[in-house]
Image (cartoon, rainbow, N blue to C red; front, top):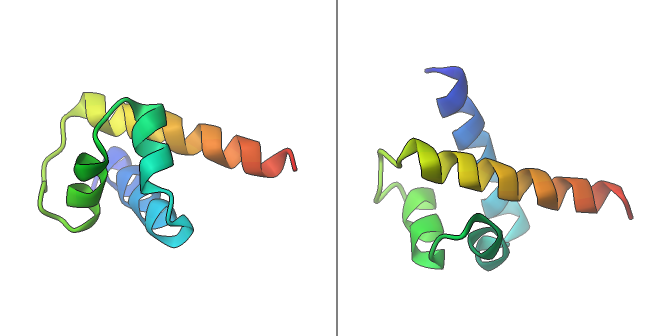
Length: 68
């Protein structure tokens, strides 16, 4: 598994644990169904653009969590 694939998997686990699909979708500029489909493995091969957008959204959320 590549580094990008591992990072993407970690991000999806973070989203599942935090139950913040809508927030991630809003920050990433994707539909909440896209996030749900990725978590449920209904979209096994997301585009690199989507993976990067989700990574940026999760990083933003993690940064905001650490500032409290």
